[in-house]
Amino acid sequence: IRIRDIEEAKARERERIARELHDVVAHHVSVIVIQAQAGRAIAVTNPERAVEALATIEGAATQTLTELRAIVGVLRDGQAPELAPAANLGDLQGIVQGLADAGRDVRLEVTGDVSLRRLLSPAMELAIVRIVQEALTNAVKHAGPDAAVRVRIHHSPAGVSLQIRDNGKGAGVTDGLGHGLVGMRERVAAFGGTMAARNHITGGFVIEAFIPTSPGAAA
Image (tube, rainbow, N blue to C red):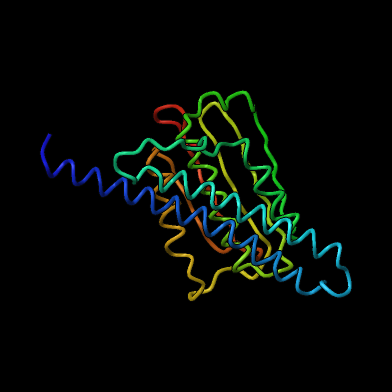
């Protein structure tokens, strides 16, 4: 094995870990910020609801630390850390519910033949989860506090189709979506898929992606 090949492999792994760190931190911090704002607004008038907001913040922070330890653990030389299981499609409902509990109008719809999930590798499932997380984080930041977000996952023999759409104000040139979208496209491209991200003609922003589960498949 050439030294250059080893260095390139290390660089690719560092990039992967950087994306994981970004996705995990950005999503959970968004939930924490929403709950902190809500808790501050109702601390005097509704103490019980404020306590619930604090509990959600505690849970999100704890989950963030757990995932960060798992990701960063792979960087520690000479150790064999016990890593948490990689995120999978079963985690999507919890991710969506976390934002819903924080007061956002977010819903998940899964259609098609769900049994076809068996065709997805763990890496594919992780990629789908991180794409959805990043898209939801962008929607929370840029769509506006009253925007509704719909996450649609469709299973077909050819592959999995994703759509994350909001009815907010759309993306402007200074909204800072660039790095997140680049990361999403890289994840999709790694499995031979396609992705589009744009302001929707009827308003809001939409991200659509397709990850094939069979060679040459098309959405």
